[in-house]
Image 1 (cartoon, chains in turn cyan, yellow):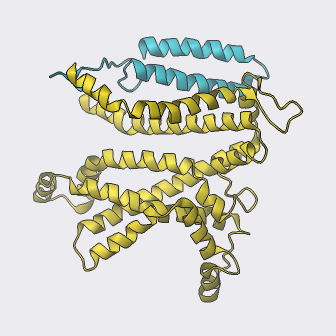
Image 2: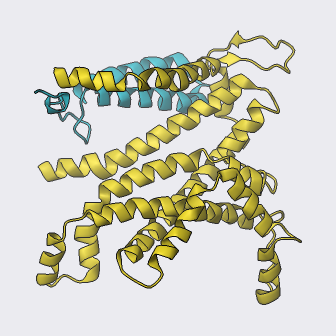
Image 3: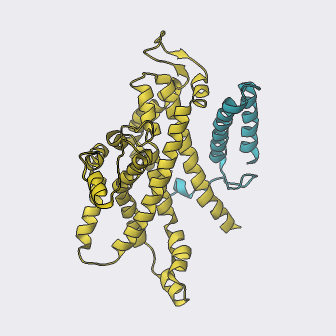
Length: 68
Length: 293
């Protein structure tokens, strides 16, 4: 009788300091997306529009998901 | 495959309930967080506001102060509960006269409703009526007034939380301590390890999963504490104990600023998730990785 818990999870180690699976990397990317936007609104939005933060955090997110 | 189907079948009654009471309210708050919706406003209708609520809250000194207070409260309360709970669990591992009675008495706060705990502590500490200020003044000459001194009010809320929730930590750690294998401890004693070395190198690593689970539960609870503090201090004096839950309540109900309150709730949830995840990543995932190397 097979069980889902026996199935190996595709974890790997990239540049992040912990082993992660795909869900972990998406989760970290979402957390960073929110953190970067809040930081931007508080400190940088007067000089640079929020769209820059969105583009930056999407790029960072893609890098984390691909290489993290 | 069959086990998988049985698993889903067993989850069937839970999933709709979780969806109705967990997922739908969360999605609703998520949507409202991006809306301007205040029934006292000139236009009381719901209007899409992009990130305006979030932009407003990163500059809101009252919100940031409440957040800081809540983090301070959670730190002191959870740390004290873990330390005290561990020592009490170790105490209950030993035999002593009246152990059963003491254990029952010690567990009682756990079954009391938070609102009743708040009311009890209010009666204990209210100036001019409560026995605590009276005897502290009479015996030690110490003026204890939680309606006047902000530090006293803050630490009284911490002590109340510790009194209420330490039994939970004790019971969790007691269960964990009872299930530890004896062999590593005997081996360490034979090798001449002292008590601190045994605690640091054997007990603590073996208890780590139980301690982490307890810290997660208690931290999440401490970050959303409302009712006890509401009964005890009402968030005062001033805003000295206006923790984030109380602050959100003030914004959502008396001020009816539903959009802004939802944005605050989302940020609080976000911070809770981030802190739990960082704790997990820092204490478990990273160390496991080092061990694997």
